[in-house]
Amino acid sequence: MPLQNGYSINRAPSDDEEDCELLVPPDRVPPQCCSARLNLAMLMFLGFTVVYGLRVNLSVAMVAMVNNTEPPPAINSSNSSKHVCPLPRTNNSETGFTQPDGVPVYQWDSETQGWLLGAFFFGYLCTQIIGGYLAGHYGGTRFLGFGVLGTAALTLLTPLTAQLGPSWLFALRALEGFGEGVTYPSMMAIWARWAPPQERSRLTALSGSGGNFGAFIALPLTGFICETLGWPAVFYLCGGGGCVWAVFWFALVSDDPRTHKRISEEEREYIINTVGAQGTGHGWKVPVLSIVTSVPLWAIIICQMCSNWSYYTLLTSLPVYMDNILHFDLQSNGFLSALPYFGAWLVSSLSGVLADFLIEKRVFSITVTRKLFSSVGLVLPSVFLVSVCYVGCSHIWTVLFLTLSTTTGGASAAGVYMNQIDIAPRYAGILLGITNTFGTIPGIIAPIVTGYFTEDHSLDGWRKVFWLAAGIQMCGALFYLIFGSAKLQKWAMTEEDRAEAEKRRTSSICT
Image (cartoon, rainbow, N blue to C red; front, side, top):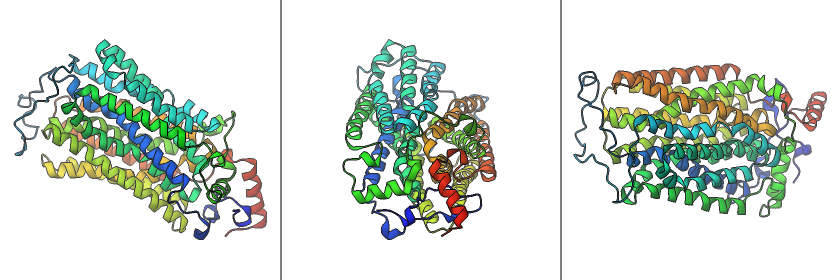
C-alpha cells in the first residue's frame, strides 16, 4: 500500500520545516491490535522484564547470602543517634531473616559485597558500543536474544561460583553484564527497522518499560523466594525464565518486516514505506567524526547521565535508606522499594502514547515533544527528591515523595531516551550504545558518593545525597533544553533522503 506520492514520513526536514513531515492518514494505518509490531514490542517488554530481574536479583539475595555476617550499625551511638528516625509503631519485633535449613551463608564483609554488586557494570560498559554497531549492521534480534540467553545461562551458575569464592562470583557477574550490554542498543536497532515514525514513542516506550516492570517484580519476589526456597532458587528461577523467553524470541521474531513470516501484507507495506531508506542497515562504515562532534548527541549523553545519576542512586540505595533511616521491616522494605518502579512503568508506557498523539495531531513538533517529556522526567523527580529533605522522619511523606520521584521520571522514556532514533535512525543502535555507555558511569560512581555521604547513617548525609541528585538532574534538563534536537542529522541521511529533501526544496511542497 504505497503512501501519498510515495513519500516516506521519515524524510529529512530542513531546519525550519520540521513540522512539515507527511503523516499517514489514520484510515490508512493498519491496526496495532494483534499486529506483528505490537507482538514484537510485547516480547521485548517481557525480555527486558527478565533482563532487569537478572540485574537486580543479587542486590536483594545478598541479604540472605551474607545473613548475620556483620552486626547492624549502632543507631543509638553518640555520633548518629540524634540524626536517625525512631522505629515505626508498626515495626515487627521479628527482624531476623529466615530461610530453609542447609542453605549456605558466606562471611563477606561490606567491601566485598560492594565489589560484587558493582561487578555487573564493569562488564556492562564494555559491549554497549560494539553491540550497537553490530546490531545496526546485521540486525538486532539475534544480539538481543543471545544477550538475554547468555546472561540467563550464566545466572544459573551463580550458586556454584558463590561456593568457589567471591572472585569467581565477581567474574561471573562481570560476564553477565558483558552479555547484557548489547540488549538495549539492539532494541533501538530493531525499532529503526520496525517502528513507523509516528508510532516510535509508544512502541519504544512500551518495550523499554519492561526494565521498570522487572525491577518492580524482582525486588519483592526475590525476598519471598529467599525466605521460602532459599537464595539459590532465585538464580535458578530467574535464569530458567530467561532461557524460556529466548525460545519464544528466536521462534517468533525477525530482523526486518520484509522477512517476517506472519506479518500481513498491509502491515509490511505500511512499515516499509513509512520507515523508508532509514530502515536499512548502516553497513560497515560509520561517520565516526560526525557522530562524536554531534551537538544533539552530546545533549542526549549529558541528559541521560544526569538522569541516570538519580535513577541508580535510588535503585542501589533505596533499600538501605528504608532500612537504616526509616527502619522498615524486610517485607515492607521489599514492597516499598519496588513501588516506585511500578509507577515508572505506568508513566513511561503512557507517556509514549501521549507523545505520539501530540506528534500525530501536530500539537508540538518532534523536538518540542522530546524536550517537554524530558523536562517533566527530570525536573519533577528533582522537586520530589528535594521535598524528601524537608519531611524529616515522616514515613508516609518520605515514601510518597520517593515514589513520585521515580514515577515521574518515567516520562523521560518518551523524551531523551528515544531521541537517538530521531536524529539518526540508521545509526540508532550504535548511538544508544554510546549514550548508554556514558549513562552507565553514574551506576558506578553514584553508589560510591552515596556511601561517602551516608557513612554515619545520618539524615543530614542522605539530604546531601538527594540534593546532589536533584541538582545534577536539573543541570541535565537545562542542557538538553538548550542543545537537544529531534531533527534528522545530515550525516545520517541516505542518498535517497538527500534526493527527496532536494526535491522538496525545489518544488516547495509542504503539507
